[in-house]
Image (cartoon, rainbow, N blue to C red; front, side, top):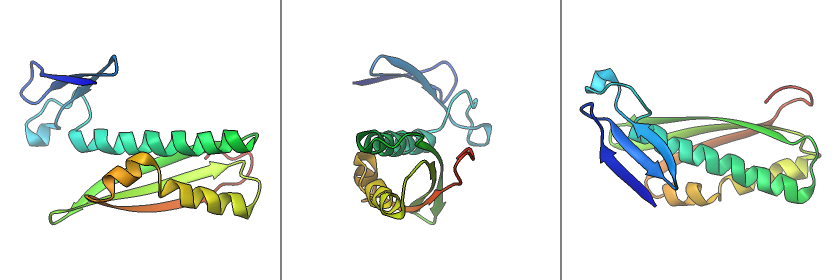
Length: 134
């Protein structure tokens, strides 16, 4: 359950999501106070979280010791079209077959599937060298 109320500033929104407090806002360029991420930042953050959790779950089921993951995502618009660029770096994947499986899984995470009808999501998933921080 998500409960949202209008905050004190013009576009501030105080949110309680599953018992966790969040704040959303717009940047000053849009008349906000920049006290929290904007709505699309929250959408992209949800995709980042789902991506990382899903891949971590898979790696744990496979018993991949030393598996690590980072992701960088960016929302952009071209005209009225929405795009998300997703860069995922992993380490600790034992072989190319495992890396290819992660590339397939990342395209089918629950939030990815929910967003695909409205967003074009471009993903690059690459393995970084062992010992390097992804």
